[in-house]
Each structure stands twice: as C-alpha cells, then as structure tokens.
Length: 405
Image (cartoon, rainbow, N blue to C red; front, side):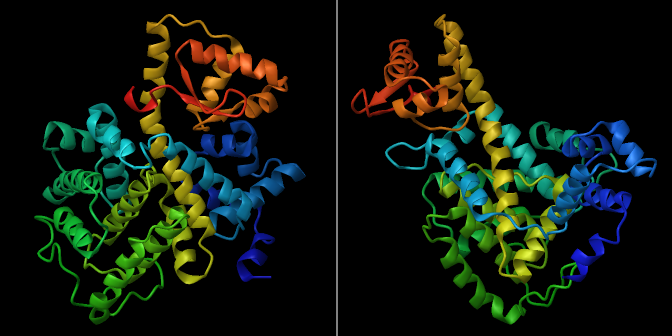
C-alpha cells in the first residue's frame, strides 16, 4: 500500500474534507451538494459534532482519492465519455469536414464573446492574474482601463483574445499544427510583455511548486519539432493524443514564460481540428488540473487528466448549444408546432447527446413496438423537425437543418 493511500486511513473526516474542498475549489455548499447532503450535515461533520454514515464515508474516501490523483478511472467509463463528446461534435460536420463548429463559434458574436471571455479569464487566472471575470470582460469588449491593475494584466487579457482570434481563423482556414503555429501563438500572447516573445528560451527554468525537471534548453530545438509531428497526427482517440501532447509540452517548458497559456491553446487547437469544442479549464479547478497533469507527466497513467479534459470540453459544448437549443425552441414556437410528450423526449435526445436516432432506439427508449416507434418518428418528420436517411424501417433520423439554424 502506498504512503498516500495509507495516510487516508489515519486522517479524520474533517482533514479529508479540507483537502477535497481546497484542491477541488469547492465552497462548503458546493461540497455538500457533491456529497449529497445538506449544508447543516456537512457543517456538523466539519466541526466533528457527528460522523458520516458508512456509505457517505466511502463516498468521501472516493472523492479524496480522485482529488489527490489516486483514483483509477475505469477504461469503459472513459471511453463512453469520449464517444459522447465525439457524437456532439459529429452534429457540426458537413461532408465529414470539421468546419461547422468553428464557424458557429466565430460567426455568432454572443457565442464567441462568451467563449473567448471564459477561455481568457480562466487561463490567465490560473497563471496568477488578479483580474475578475467582469474586469476581464470590460478590457476585452469595451477597451476599459481598470484602475489599480497593471499594464501587464491588461496586455495579458487583450493578447489572449488576439491569440484566440488567430487560432480559430488559422484552424478554420485549414492551417497545420506545427512549430510555426506554436511560436506565433507565443509571439501574440507575450507581445509587449516579454522580449523573447515568439522565441524558445535560452536558459534553464523550473516549474514552481513541483519537482519536475524541464528540458535542457539546448534540446528544445530538437524536442519541439518531434512533439509537433505528434500533435499533427490524425488519431482516432484525439482526446488521448491531445492530452499526451499537452503534458509533454508543459514538461518541455519551451518558453521562458507563457508555457501554460500556450499549452492550453495548443490543446484546444488540436480539439478544434477534430471538431470538438475547446476545453474550458476553470481556475477553480487549478489544483485538480495540476495534480492530474503532474501524474500524467511522472507516470504512464493519463486517465485522470483525460477524464478531466473530457469534463472541460463539455463546458465548451455547453456554451455553443445553449444558444442552439434556444434557437430550436424559438423555431418550434414560430411555426406553432404542437409536440406530444414522446416527441419532445425524442427531440431532447437529439439535442443533448445523440446526433442521430433509429427506430430501434425509440423502441428501446419507450419500450414500445416498432410500429409505434415509426409513428413517433413519422410525426416529427411531417412536422419538419427531423429528416430520415435511408429506408423507413432501418434508416436513421437527424434534426432537420441542424447546421443552418
């Protein structure tokens, strides 16, 4: 048994809860919700006035192992998450070309602004920015100067926004992920902040807070082309590849500053290239992110980091699809379409997970006959909400004109 696992058995409930709260970035109310108890019950455990029941103790231990990077993620569970994300991304392809997702992010200003704000605020906050999300928004969209905040922090926000514009347009134009792309990202991010913007470091560095040797600066010109060749590969499991490249990039630490922000942009460029939404790594999850990143860099186990990235991608999709769902609802209202309960549930399945559905799926979901399932789908088809591809009995159905809403 490892020292860290052994320590679990010598910690009291409050000590475990404190670790979970600190590393997970939870408030006590959020922590209570995660465990599935009231704030009063959690507070009683915290102050050692009562003891959790065995099931809740087991749940606290499970969360503790997850937070500290000791939990083992079942392979089938991780694969199911990845497949669900691929299905969400598949909705935005046209003739197997991954351009619809990025064009939606770039052409809809409301979606783009929300996405750029989240990515900029959280990435900079992880690196120590003192700007609030509201202050970041004022700088990005209104060019406001925030009193009491440094010029560097203003530049970090505007430069990150500019780097995002560059990255999205570059990927949308079919640009290749290579060394030139990474150096350009760094040049934009560090413009006016760092003299060596756009150039690899020529001296040694260390990562604060962990013992993780970075690459000798003399080897960086050889290591980076090799890493970029890996990043440019077309792999079936893109999340695994992007996670691996991200952890290796941060371990190489090719620049004197800005490695975290460039690394997260590179990660997202790879995801966008595969028609996945960008991963929004929230600053509240900083300790969790660093714990899983360190485990990936020091062991052969990348599963916790992959799982974390999957959850972060979900947030990116949510930004896009909140507006899409509203647009779809508005379409139904505008056409004054009346939907039965089963029809609404089928639409929800197509909106929130399945990119297509078959008669057999409807049979299984509602536990009805094939004839009844065909009636549900035919009704939606007649109402102009879904489209059939193939024979009536064995074809697949998709939302109508998903890409042009």
